[in-house]
Length: 408
Image 1 (cartoon, rainbow, N blue to C red):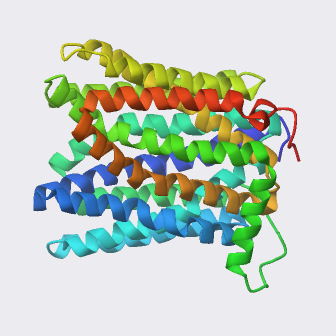
Image 2: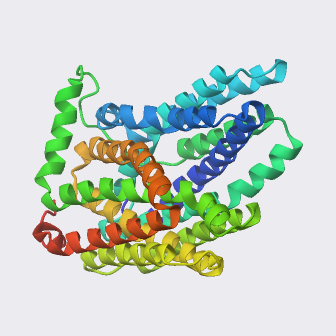
């Protein structure tokens, strides 16, 4: 499958189907949030919806990784998509015959999160069996480009559809997107993954520990995983605080809030596309410094802006978005390159869960500090701390030698 004439065709076919499913899922996610807002006008219910959307995935991730490493990744992705589609279909049919209760909406959000706990790391673990090793960083850039494009397009499409369709019909759109992804996967011949453990009863805790120990042996990757969790603590609240920064500190309107978020997503897309075309520096340490450096400087600059500096904030938003793929793409490619296939699902699930579980802590900390210091000072403080992460990468011996040791 790593034949240079066929791998790209296979990779883009797989991720083409996944991008359709990702787009329809993003549309439904926005529509559900607006539906809850419209029906309840309750911040508590919106917080609960956010919790249902990511907490199951964060908790189940390490356990899902054990099964991903035991079974064929393509089948795991198909079954996950089918489960998510079935939950959506159930909710859509219910909504056509009566009012949707909030508990049913929350339950489907939780089911979608559980499905993602299996689907996302399975897709990440599948890529090394399709693409040559030297193309993994570019592939990470391409896959993030699909995700970034979805973030740009889905809010606008969701707002149009939400105005003319009822929620059940929008949910059916996501069911269709998931089925398209499944049919594309079923029609593509991929290398089958047979670890030879399907008939054994899993010792889940032992196998999670095995994945952790494999990651720990890779000293540079283990250090980068810790750094990525700290980065998540600082980075996750930024998107949540964008509307407040635009409307409260800069005294803007909903238009300004939407513009700043769109510019961030455009930067994310541009950065991902550049990574996909360029492939990054040969020395991956420079990629980490570049990512943290641009993000840190843009955030620090935002913290220094006066209340009339929205135009500069909009410029900084593009740079914030553009910087993120250089770290996440490099980190993903390093995991795919350095971790043996038999452990890749567990390692991806474990690292993903750690970063996901750091999100609520980051949101809590940012809320407290922003209330106490002022939102603009929180942006500036986050920038300084992210610049410090760049210094940590330079000062950590294993990360400095990341391209010289640890290859499997």
